[in-house]
Picture 1 (tube, rainbow, N blue to C red):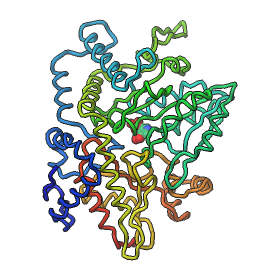
Picture 2: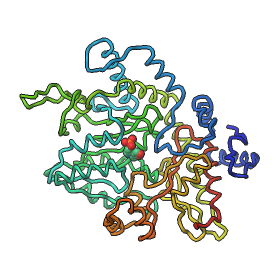
Picture 3: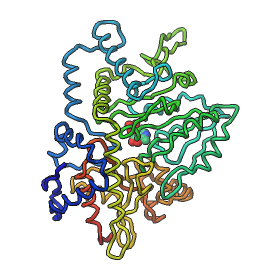
Picture 4: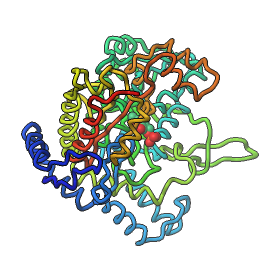
Length: 486
Ligand SMILES: Cc1ncc(COP(=O)(O)O)c(C=O)c1O
């Protein structure tokens, strides 16, 4: 890849020396030789994702959502233009045409993840949160049940605790340990070895943290199952840049969102579930589409067979074919290649960010999570520090980054548990702040009363990130050298 000066110019930074950038890129290639083998992605970016470079945008929020290619849009439009597709709840020609496309997409999801159709089923949902909600509301929690989860989890996983609580289940959080924010293994083993023998036991952890990028060991799945736990593997942040093979790792449930993998379409996710695990669930309601029959006067209903029982109303039948197009697109590029590229760029960015110092030798950034690439993905959570180690407010960082045309994410990324440990917030801190009447005062409480931060900045790399994107973020970070919080 050749970087042109115009590609690297932000319009805000005078350091636009193309020779210097070329040298940096050369050194980068020497340090990360695998990057060269991913050049097909540069070609793809130029051809299929040209809006990125045309707009001069530096997109660094892939954990928030992926970017889509022209190819995906064109293929989907072509398909829709080529047929008549009606509501799949009938047996007429337009309905059958929709059913065929949706079932094809459903099978293809299993094929993509190497999941046996004898063992696994795919339930289409609106997103990963929707998939988690299905489990939460239908899992047979009871007073003799346990719900075990890591501090490092998305709020949709934390939300399941409310279902567990309402049924009297025991809820236990296993901490992650600063500074790397990896699971406290001793604690986890302690709890895994103590399922309630008289009830149902559910354990959940993310394959990749959407906060720190940590990749938790997938070996926990089989280990937990061997003690009798049902396991949810939250795969949402992992699958966009990693291969998930359901022949190798066999969670009972795995939620994910497709837009995080390939940008388009939004509004579709799925729950990949073991058929045996689905049999354990008890849906608390029924709707059209999910039933075999229901009666008003008979006051009874029969749920549909298999996945039908879990898909409410009309599935997103015009959009589901675009899921298959997206998965094939990823397959064609190769998830291994995407993984390799993201690993090189994240490694470079981490190493350069942690080498930034103020004149007084104080670091410019604090990274929350691992500083090297062992068992981690392409999301980096950080805060900017001034020479006195005072944290720059993350809202200000987002504003400043926007001036550089950089899209990043700030806050706690819907993962409060990892944040509480990263920012050194204690149980007392959190309980005190919930004591305030006004909700809006929460962030102020953490800042003003506790003198701590309630959030961070996250940059996340993905499918078509290139060296220029990583470099532009580094340039942005360099503008904080010797800058003071006012
Ligand atoms: C690990 C993880 N789980 C679940 C979710 C929820 O995804 P969605 O908002 O698409 O429902 C996210 C979203 O960022 C995530 O990163």
